[in-house]
Length: 195
Image 1 (spheres, rainbow, N blue to C red):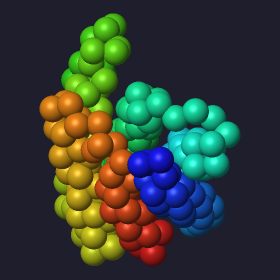
Image 2 (cartoon, one colour):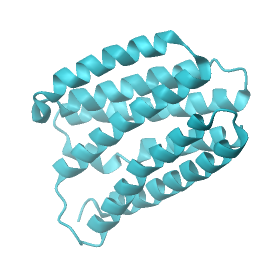
Image 3 (tube, one colour):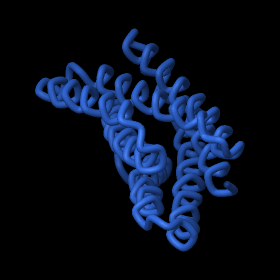
Image 4 (tube, helix red, strand yellow):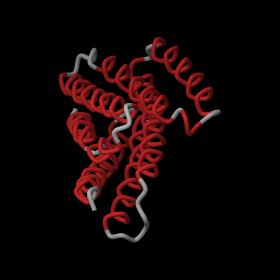
């Protein structure tokens, strides 16, 4: 199967990412004065853990693989990631511009979801564009580790925006590289953890 490398790589990256998000959740829950910040990391670990388990099921042929399934899963993960990252960065920065962009994002996502099957690429692209804005905004922290998290998070979002373009152009093979941008998210979470 052409996607088996992608499933193995995706499983490993997403399990590491979800594990690191859980570790970050536990650390922030103890250290940060606002308990809600740590919970964003814990909640964000869930979609990636589910994605890893689905990829493992595909790798072991426990369930049949359809490229559209992976596309749907990544779209829903991107929505969850966008929402949680907006809330996280807003709770840290109290930047009202983020909320304004989030409001516009919500309106477009709700409008696009009315015809879901035709607009998955739009939803995926807009979600990662929102994530890109959030990570660019987080580069303005004074903490250098948070700035590096913003840089690697921006690379994560930009990678998925490029993949979204290839998917919109009809390249289903682009899905086999979908886990690569999550490596940058793993590095971004690492910098959030060490900050």
